[in-house]
Length: 373
Image (cartoon, rainbow, N blue to C red):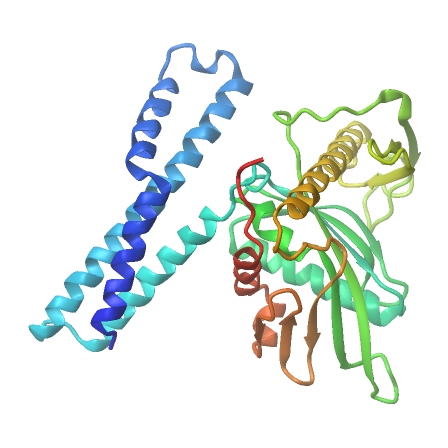
């Protein structure tokens, strides 16, 4: 049974959210922006109309989220009062408390995602490390973990490029995670090297093996984001898509490979960005998808420079290391630990089935980023 202090804490946190989010202002803004969608010529410009609908949906998410928090807080207050009149049980009060806390924490977490790229869809690339079959199997396990997470959060996963392992697993995969809310905002916490320690099923001696796989997450830009691609630095290759079955497979050059000669604007250092896309059986669609992935990478590089500059300015904050070892999954000890936040859990099976929200929340709380540029 919760205490009166716990009830007081819930009420104070709900009131604080009302203040921080300025819900009254958002409600007025929602009503005004919704009115714009009712104009007779609203759909004359489909692109602008679609952006307006996104804006309305975004504001509504905040308004509805706080409405849920307020409703659950009021229900908890009522249940607490009714308990003293013996009209509800302890279990019912505790259940209402759990619901109210979850609604508050979900909204508090979303409030941490203030960067303009946080609401975007994202591109995730997983590469196996050195170690052959063992690392390739680990890369496939991570792919499954993130696909499970995406499914649980209402996202659609599109595999735009997949390289199978030699015996098992995968060498690499590029996935587009779309259609939900804040895919990049949440999954940016997964950037880095993931380490697996287990007794390998591929080792005849049953030895404990360590494997690595790297995860790279970038925001998936859309037509509303302006990213300049110098056409003089672009070249294209065509190749035959591999895969199981189908008349097109290995007969028509539908796979595309884009090469972009990137020059770092600060250092002048040159680098070739290489992207392959075999998502569609139509070459034109693969070219468009590859160009979108290239723009996402270029946008991501510019964004990371901005984040690095902010990290240097904000004295006393831990620097976010892109590409460093971030998490260890030790199967024998039933432990998964994040080395940036020190958050850990013994629910290894749950984590590998996509239950990584607690790791994401710990990261966002440890490394909050201001919305001020």
